[in-house]
Every structure is written in structure tokens, then in C-alpha cells.
Length: 263
Image (tube, rainbow, N blue to C red; front, side, top):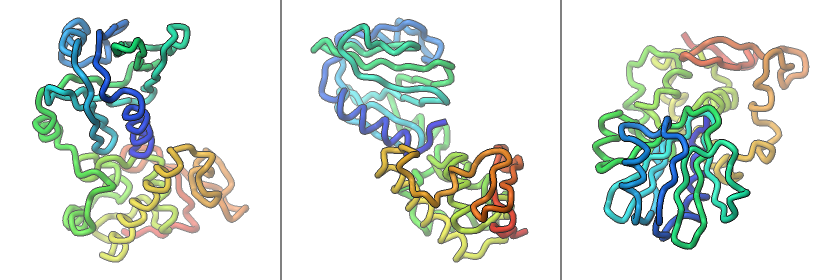
């Protein structure tokens, strides 16, 4: 599942290819991922419109139109976008494409059809309805501490709760907790104010570093934990084994001899 850094990379690509171009038509091959309206209605609403800018909140990317409406691009597990001119370059699993007046296209590719695309007349009303939390890069330490106050959930589950903190997923949550030597099953209300402050600070540092590297894992620092997140992997000490457990509803990887449990 793309997390905040990956979606930020999609946003840069979208901005660099598709803004200020009038949409001549929208071709819909398969409207399963288009929510609430039919593919035909989606195409009709967008014909003649122009994307003026974009907005990202957590894992949600919105293309802002010249009529103040928005198109939500939520990528699911396998969603991707590709800008191309030659039809021979069309993505294999393209579900729809915006065709611009200059003849170029922005295709939305989604092999497993888990993406969710919406045409929104009121983006703020939608965000309020789904109760999406503050973006992980924009939340203040004060707000994070207030949201953590008295919570009995695991810290892993807390970080993954998109109504609290938008954008952090499984990979980066495990990374943060490994780097701070905190066991992911630790209870939020058993962590000190200093622990929690360090968690949000490190979260933002890691997300920004990932963004700076365009979410390209091979460019991540050699001492980051993601490369040990494999079943039965030998831990960074060269002797122990990485363990896994279901924490916060997700398969979680951790190094028990290194990460302290607070319960």
C-alpha cells in the first residue's frame, strides 16, 4: 500500500505532467474503481475541465479542478499513474485515462482494482465525513500529544490510525519504532511525554527523508530497518532473528532484544 512518501511522489509526477492542461475527454475502460457514479458520468463531468493544482492529505491525493471541484486519487495497493503520448505506451492495466487537448494522456493503472477514484464537489465535506486525521508531516507535537493522551492502544495501532495521523502505514511505523528502540506492542499510555515527542519528531524526519529520495527504497540509508522486514531475517546484530506478530491489525516486524516493551 503506498504510504505518504509514495503518494507525495505521485503528486510531484501529477503536478509535473497534468496541470494547466484542458481535458478533451476521459476514456473509461473499466469503472469498477470509480466510486459513487458511473464511468460515463465521471467522463462527462471532467470533459472540458482543467486541473489547476493538487492537494495531498496522508495517502489521499486530490486533483483540484478549475470549477473548484476535485478528483480523488486513492491508489490502493497497486494504483499508479502514467503520462504518455503514444498509445503503444498505454499501461497494461489502465482503467481510465484523461486525454488532454495536446494529445497526451494521463492513464490510471491498477492491476488489482483496489484503488478508489471519486469526483468530489466539496473536498472538505468529504474529508470531514471520513474523519481523516491531520497529515503526518503537518501535525504539531502539541496536537500529537493531545491525541495520545490516555490512549490504551498499542503504539503501532495508534500510528496506523488514519483518523489520528494521516499517511503513516505499516512500513514506516515499523521503521520509526525500530529506530527509537520501542516495541510496537507498547501501550501509548505507558510511554512518557519524551517518548511520544520523539516518536512524532522521528516520524516526520523519516517521512521527509523518504520524500527526498522519491520513496525509492534502494536509496534509503543502509541502517534503516526496512531491509530486515522479512520473515526469519537475521537481525542487525547478526545473531538474533526478526520476529513478527499481528499488532494494530497488521503484520508487524520487530527486533525484540533491541526494542523495549512498555506495558
